[in-house]
Length: 600
Image 1: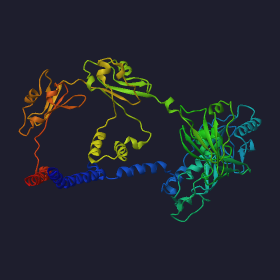
Image 2: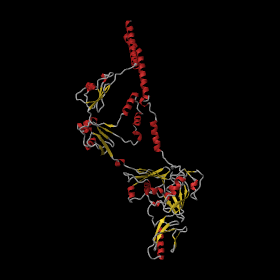
Image 3: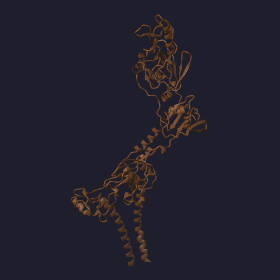
Image 4: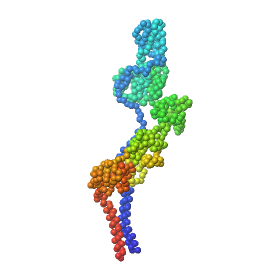
């Protein structure tokens, strides 16, 4: 019993030492769990901030009209005075004649055409023939009437009447144009030229040179260096008030989208062009999905589904034409979705769908049906290059066969398939982001985190496939299916062995069948003075496994690593000595106590 008591007492006295060591070790490991990875200490939070900024930019909308900062004398006047540019032959049936139009005529014995200009009263005065009232009449009618009038006076020969120069006149622009006022236009100008030149679209915040503006009498005058900042103009609700009392509408958005000139009327003398404010907010139509131009467009009465898609510049190839969705607000808390067969509408087999303000149109696309998948082969195959595949169905063996098979120089042991995944979320394409995201909920200690960080850094998305088993042993069970973007790399077979580390002449050495590690080291100049010959390792080609030289044969592509002798300082040995001393002290104490008790 005394001996048992002594043993218990000895262990009791020694246990606090062990318990203290164990407690310190546990506290150290617990602290490492919350301690940052040393490989990331020098990194800032900039990457995370950039990810957040990316989403802010993605969700933000860029709006507003571009400011030029130019003066009216530098940009506006030269454009207004530019020579007339015809968009084609003048249509005699639609061109309306007015004061200022110049004609050329030829009749009787005349050899040279004579020009005549329509007077301010709208008369075409011809010597020896008389005055003809032509104002407001179509050009075709004027030519016919004038020719008959000449023919009645000079029955011999043909009378030729032709428009030589279209007239210029003044129109007035009001509303949300950058610089409202009266400006020159020609009889072949359309609404868009005047609106664009005056800056109703782009010239917001423009400095106005009043001296230059005075060159156009009737132009609204502003204080020197004044800045005009009109509201955004509407391009879909422009109205043209004619001197005849008629009112026309212009829709420049549909004109630019379709090229239909009926949405961009030709100007006439004295037209007043009213450009209203854009009221798109709360009065718009959105078009999203498989269209060439996504966005929000100002609604206009009479708009339909096809109108909105025309403004969006049409649908993309592969769009689902049978299931176009229109989301419509029916009330404060009520939404409904209309599914429309756009193909039937386009073919005239179904009616077009009238739109309402705030409708949202979604055109879906089947990305799997339209996407083209392919893989690439590089290296030692007969026909390297890109090959189309059926994703998830085409196998590695099929693609290699289409590539003509391997060349005689191919190394199957080192061949590999790299998977390049496409990430819908751009942040996932950043390997640093993926690594941090994967580790954020882990309970790994510091050592585990650092090792995981190391493995994740060298990760290359390689597909696990044994080329030797699949092609060398013809084992179909080792085959794998391929995905879009896969890269098949077949390198050339190695003919060298690489020796590096603590040798006198590190580098590549020609492979010699049957030669051992000592032979290769000898050919590399032998071991250096600081070499640790007992820790030499062979890094196997292909697998990159580290093995003892005594457990493997040297093969082409292998690497021989000769490490340096490790020299440890006092700080390395002290913790070992301290722990050993504590254990010896506890043991000695127990032994002494045991001896004392047994003597009694």
